[in-house]
Image (cartoon, rainbow, N blue to C red; front, side, top):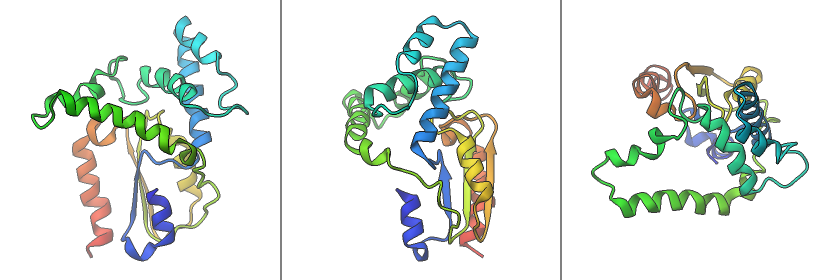
Length: 203
């Protein structure tokens, strides 16, 4: 993970920029799940409530398996936790590759198969991610955070950044984004890379 790289070899970095930053995987899972269940109950979505309640308490003491993660992700993303304000079926995300002339059907199938493959092989290590005990960062830190992100909930990142001691730190909120910041607000992403990040590398 890039966070570990920056902590171990700060001499190789001008700054650290986090997008969809994970601070503590278990906390993220808990916040994401709670959001999905709250929205489902508020809207009377019986299907969603039934599925989510089938794995409560989450994450709890049970192992965080791929099957449990799929249920947990499904409903927060249904309610805009992946792409803010977008259709519940996620056509915005899953259909994006159709816009590129560089991908054919086989490429697209490989892309999504790769997601599944990766999750299966890195899940155990990913579940151990916990930077909540890191109170100092040796280089400047800039966090790009989607206001509606409930895939890697921004609240945990904002809280961590607030108490972090670093040479420079800045929180940049994307008010019309969830998790896919660079897709949802590409102009603002570029502008902040130029205005907030580039000066940290180029005097």
